[in-house]
Image 1 (cartoon, rainbow, N blue to C red):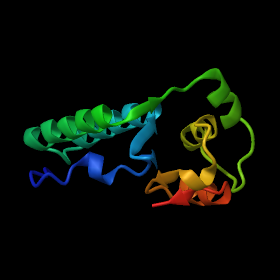
Image 2 (image 1 turned 180 degrees about the vertical axis):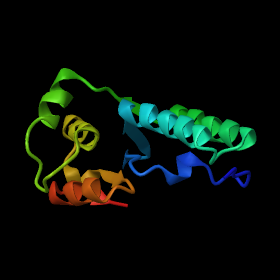
Image 3 (image 1 turned 90 degrees about the vertical axis):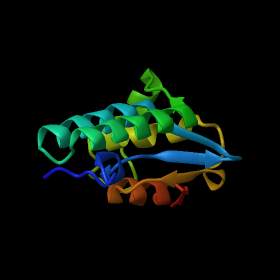
Image 4 (image 1 turned 45 degrees about the horizontal axis):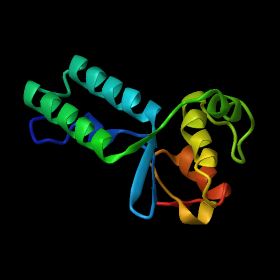
Length: 131
């Protein structure tokens, strides 16, 4: 099914996390790789036509320019390997959640934006606002 209305893979992404504090938007570098893979999969499955694919990549580049990238460091990976309040957590979701603790702000000053229910549950359990 080709979709030329602009309702592309990026808008259906299940785990895009952004944190907002004083107008700053940050996301895990993992988000970009997952979103790009989502576009590739949607195109390969016939869910995106050429125009929708170009629009999806354009939206992804715009998102990337607007965000501060939170690196996937050794500390992030170490944190991802420890338990979260609401288990089980998939590995990639844990890697999304782990950088929150490296921001240096109290959870009350950070809003997590995600469509993934497990990430939402854990973010709330860790004290973060969720949108």
